[in-house]
Length: 373
Image 1 (cartoon, rainbow, N blue to C red):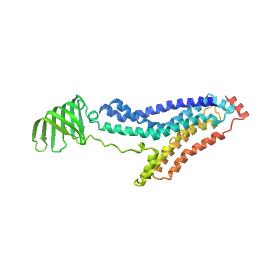
Image 2: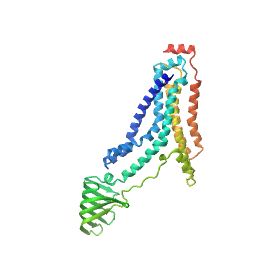
Image 3: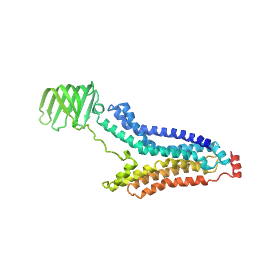
Image 4: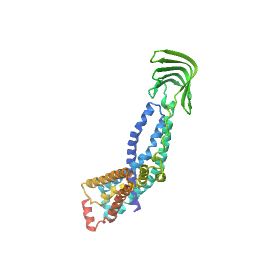
């Protein structure tokens, strides 16, 4: 039986990897589109773009894993039926529970792996992503200012820099400032240097001219300088986001929900998320059983197993939709958590019962099935 389990398990794992990688690639492409502007318009380094988009993969994998396993298991067992391998297995006395053992094994392994992904991989990736996002938004020289381009901040200040020489050193600078409604200030300098302070970034200009025009009176004034500082304040300094729920593990979620100062609404949301983290890995096993149970207990049909496959797909979709609905409802009504567990464990119990109690072929059935082949 070990050879049979290995034979089926290898096919399931191959199919799972192909489906999972394909789906993850498509979702990675759609998710990465929101970062393309940072590369094309704001000069985000390609390696940083790849790193940030890669940090989204653990969360995407945890979502796609049960669906990819469902597709792989259904494809493999349907192919076993089409090639008449499944009929031969049953004809020699191998029970449906034994044939389904490979799918159960893969489902259990992926469930255990998803426990690690959801409670270790996703929180660490989200934390790292938050740090990188903060760093990128506050990288004034790389993200906001570009050579030979006009950069506008909050529609009040425009900066043009002709050339970046060294770290923070620039040449050919034009600064147009219209913060005040009644005047416009244009500053031109040969060179300058970007410096960072607690109050925000500053541009220290050398050898230039500062021109001021009063919009109401039309009065114009001009002055030359050797050294002049342009203070941007906190215009480009983004605040670091607070720690999100996705960055917490199960223990942290339950601990936050138990704190007296936590509002009741947030406490329910934290507990619902914690229970979702417990149940989510189990859907790998549930979906694997939903994919193979119908095909294993149904009678052989030379016209194909279209009806059985459709019923299995509808059952999977129903379980998935119910899970999403119940998680959202559990954030408002805590007693819905029990329905979340019922939605996960009931299909598991039903599929297990059907596989265990499915009878092995009798001698007459063996002859009929082999004759059909």
